[in-house]
Length: 295
Image 1 (cartoon, helix red, strand yellow):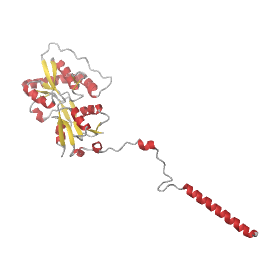
Image 2 (cartoon, rainbow, N blue to C red; image 1 turned 60 degrees about the vertical axis):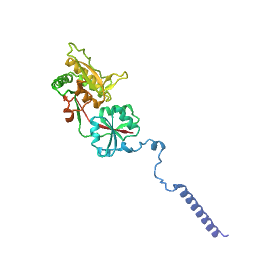
Image 3 (cartoon, rainbow, N blue to C red; image 1 turned 60 degrees about the horizontal axis):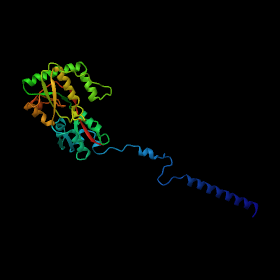
Image 4 (cartoon, one colour; image 1 turned 30 degrees about the vertical axis):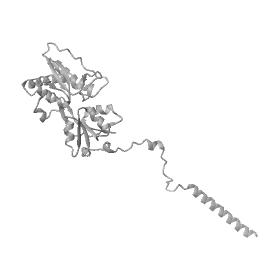
């Protein structure tokens, strides 16, 4: 082989070696089929930490979504009326708010419609299972008032309550009750309840202790709550002793009409239908209807 031929062979070998090197480099830089060389990798912790999208009633965004739903309510309440007005809804009424929550947790209804503060109490008792939707069941608010008998004596008693209510609002007692029972402020306290001197008699209050925080039972079975204490302060201001009778909510108006009780304080909404059967005081608390669903 002459020198000229040798140089050609050497040049050809170098060219082949360079081609192999380039091909190897390209093969090593390729991604698997369907991959993206520029896409960042996703760590397991990032994907696992994402909240799952809400489904079912938890994904409802308006009252329109309740059409055709199965709804639990407390019998005879405003929530009962609101639910009954929803198109296609199947409404199941129960004596106690807690029974409504049990039906929901057992999957027998889609939601519960009830006043906001009792709704919050039910959710607080079952925080891993229940949640409040962020829109009301009705755009209309309602006002709680004390109901008295539908006669002259009842009208006079309602007027006495109104005067005492103004006093409790002026002296801060009403705000203290809100702080203790509604806002649940840690350092909130109630003023001393002064004993009644020269009592004008004993009034019987009718209520339904299934409506926390307005009326419920202590662990010892004693009625307590915003309404119960509010009435104690009102009656003390008016010069009366007071006893509390706990009964089903839908039995309250009949008990008032029969004279079994003197008045009702039970988170009772003043409306036209009830005013046909009772006198009412001025309103003392505004409320709306809320919706509870399973998480």
